[in-house]
Amino acid sequence: MVQATALPRNEAGIEAAIGVLKQQFGERLQTGQSIREQHGHTTTWIINQAPDAVVFPTSTAEVSSIVKTCAEYGVPVIPFGTGTSLEGHVNAPAGGICVDMMRMDQILQVNAEDLDVVVQPGVTREQLNTFLRDQGLFFPIDPGANASLGGMAATRASGTNAVRYGTMKDNVLALEVVMADGEVIRTAQRAKKSSAGYDLTRLMVGSEGTLGLMTEITLRLQGIPEAIRSARCSFRTVDDACRAVMMTIQYGIPIARMELLDEMSVAAANSYSKLSLPETPLLLLEFHGSDAGVLEQSETFAAIADEFGGFDIEATSSAEERNALWQARHDMYWACMQIRPGAKGISTDVCVPISKLAECVGATQKKAEDLGLVAPIVGHVGDGNFHALVLVDMENAEERQKADDFISWLNDMAISLDGTCTGEHGIGQGKRPYLQKELGAATRYMAAIKAALDPDDILNPGKILTERG
Image (cartoon, rainbow, N blue to C red; front, side, top):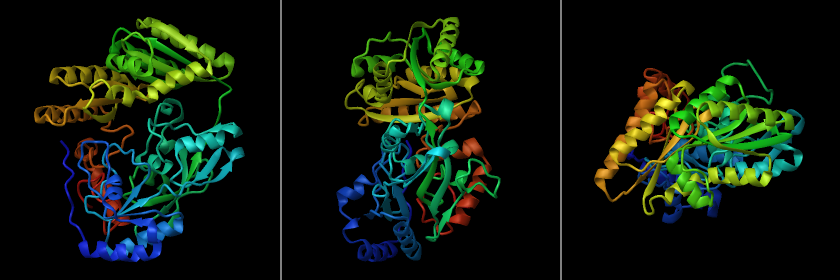
């Protein structure tokens, strides 16, 4: 099990910084135990490490002021969005000041002609898409939670649409960032491409608050498709389903979504979402384009699926039926939690080359079975990314150890297949042991970048890297 090791605390500095910030922010700085624990909340099995205070800024200038104060006193700064992190990103192992960004929730500028938008970090993906809908636009990245866009950028998140629209790294055009000394920089302009210097935007996206605090985000938008068609197809085995995925991608069908549910997940979806699907491995798909285009795409997929024993294939363009299908997919976490009431769900993700997907998913199922673990699998398999949700009795030490062994094995397995220990959850605290295994000497250069941009290690310390540069 990953231990959230406490880091040395700067007690005098923390006390002094809280005093200064209390004068500036008044009731917008809170030190009550419950709110501090809420802001150290993590959905993993990593122990809660609460900050010493939580402050609620409303502007870039206020974030800059907070960071300057913390820099002066050598106090950690931990950014916070909706708190849906899965790898301990919001824990405060050295204490410090949590900066809750959720009052910075303004959509600042929509450039419809250019297909981009400028938002503050506290805007959520659902809030943005509701705002954009009447303009015929949408933002495609859709993780399971209604996460803040700041948190999504910080973890380089993705979702069910990634196979067509990419991840956050592909959809963030520019950032406004408060650096470790409080200086405010802009990483790029709104141009769709640029060869101007080092790509600081890409450096910051996925940095998990360890290099700077994002205060404005410029995002790429898409037009709402003329036609949308969804489909589902059952298979006898996960191997058959994964091989159909690989063939579909290699054939060049412009799939918008391609999701896998294993047998256990389908049974959970039937129970939770009141469906009546065959309880065998299932692919859910979505096609975007013209009426003729989405029909052709779905028919081509059906022919491919047939080659791999696909059955019970159904496709629909009905918005009501499509929404019901995808709502069931987005509810999979809660559906799977009902498989074993009272257990804690530990979600872990890996991503492998598409040619290795069948091997990795099949081996993962067998490993969980061999260990006697309940671990339903779902995944954004169009890009080789999948999740195992390990349902653990936390009172059972032997079971906790088996779950830890399973997660370690899965990360090592993905890396051995030239994959990654995390496709979208990020490193945080939980995945730190595997980063060195995956990237080797490259982590030294990451540490050097961290040391150069944050020499006093005040920005979200204890995340991503195990050593300083």
